[in-house]
Image (cartoon, rainbow, N blue to C red; front, top):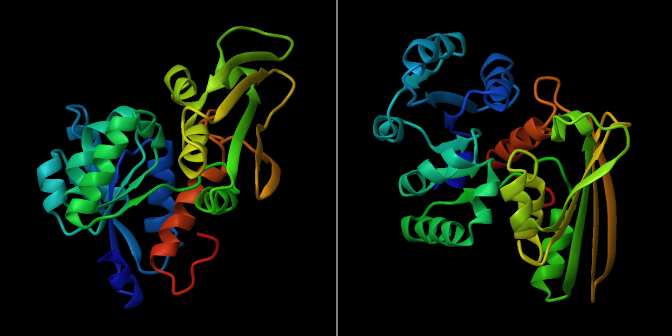
Length: 274
């Protein structure tokens, strides 16, 4: 198991699916800056035809191996696969990956399809592997999980407020509510913006009961998430104001750091809060 390797501080070898903004961030922080001791990205997968030209140069830059097919990628000497591409890729590769390797899934919107989520979880159990879902742009998941486990979580509401240009191409001068409803529908209508809603749902009361409101606000520059929860445990109220990623305004700057923190936990003798 991966955690046994971590206890012995044997280097954890990561296979990366996706070399966009988040993938490049991880390559820079892990392979170039060596921010995480005993962790290295050793393989990158991209099956697109144009990647046969682009990917080898990227692999050379970051001292790892390029792969153009999933079979050879999974047969390589990697311990865990990190998907940071998109929901389509997560659903395309997830089941095949979890049969062979542990999986850290960044595009948690794939779990909006509950049947797919159940199949992925079942495959993980059958093959003795684990699925990791980083917290991303929010916090407080440990509180929700504790309340849920004790049977005392009744309602969870998420209000996401983002700069208007990151949510809509329309020129608006006053804030507009673009969506209000269950988390399941939020991820369908705003797949690049609603991962927070899904991971919150998985920790709490589910994608049908978690209520989501998405607001486009031309007067702000940060991504703001306000979470409230109620139950027999009491009440929970938290607001997080994240600076957007300089490379992708749809993604919070903290998202990449949350992935690094999750990977650091794999190699840590003491795990705090999760």
